View 1 (tube, helix red, strand yellow):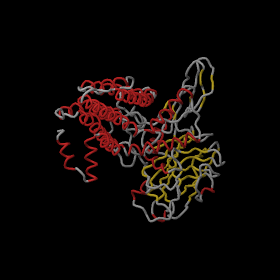
View 2 (tube, one colour; view 1 turned 120 degrees about the horizontal axis):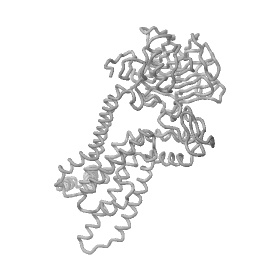
View 3 (cartoon, one colour; view 1 turned 90 degrees about the vertical axis):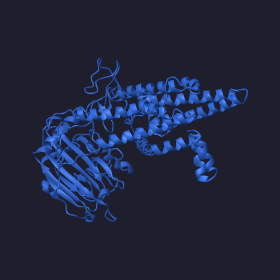
View 4 (cartoon, helix red, strand yellow; view 1 turned 30 degrees about the horizontal axis):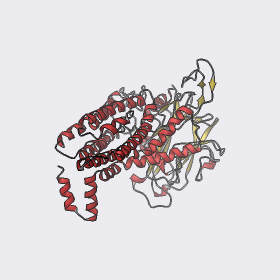
Length: 564
């Protein structure tokens, strides 16, 4: 693997040191060592979560008499903490390698610079014409407000440009004030490593062999907002576009290095007829800042689009989704899976659209899928297992069965998710979880209500059973409540698989709300789990209440100490 890392952005993580092999991205086809190391870390973390850590902790807490405390200690607190540490470790290791890579820019690279004023534009005559929605043009306008205009009327800033009457490529359309700071650099390139890198990435993204004739490179560096005091550099916006003019269409590479403020920014392509446009995910919303964290190239912050004729293409033939991470459903084919080929005898080729019998029907396009993989604590197909066995005194065999089963099932769903692109096991896991837990809670409630033991000991046993059952339900549901938006999306997506869904405005709005909820849930994960642990664990709950009310604190501390 190439050990040289160039600060100018001309890096080829493909094991060859040149641009003849596609840039490293996506599922790791061209970076086996790097991705193998990442997979090893994740696998070790999984083993630690479900096998090693619970076993070691059981040996440590073997003398604890209260099995309720033991259960939560082994299965909730440390597994979640270990998972968080493992995820953080993976992020730290991979973040420097999987962040957006700006092409070399600035005065030292030979760039020109826009004047430092408000609503600045610069007319550029291209060496090779650019084809925009079926029309060739040799003149474009570099705009200080984060776009490239095809017409002169784009020089004045306005909001809500997608759609509008402006012929515009909006990389991060916002009103920037160069008087407060920041620079806009541009240059046209006809040879060198930038063209080689662009050609390589186009080949990887679209499986097309093209010859790049020239590139228009524009960089908005450290953009500042209008009507505000200058922001620190960390809160400014830095992004770039590389327009590759080839012998087979025009390709736009959007690169977002840092997004510090938005103010309703938009990103996409607008034809200028007030009807036809293409918007990037979260464009026009506060969540547009996440364009820096996602991409359709496999590298966060990097987006690639092919345009020129009637529409904009983000994915190669046979692939669809905002981030190009989903294969075509049965009946779909072509770039972005936008073409219909629902064959009467089965599925068709997602690349060519060929049917064995030549008979096709209408097809549907569904929502893009979330990339998170959730492994939940439940032996999904046997809810009776927990209702009958959880209250037994010796739980060690069931711990082992639980962890091994989840480890195997999680490995299976992960393999299906990444290898064969089959999402059905992953979706059904979430749905079955809720159904099974409802069954467990219902059976447990009926069993406890109808059970009438004789004697004091029997009553204590019944109370202990009730406490353990309810605690188990609270614990297991807590692992899914924090990803409740994922469950809702799972139900929707599963329905789409079997009956079909049409993509429209309602679906787009739902997707944006879902994205926000999932992100919020993920950020609050550790806090939520800690609160659930306190509320579900009776000694901790009493001690916490005593701490805040300052009543019986000493007695509660002693009661906890007696459990050790």
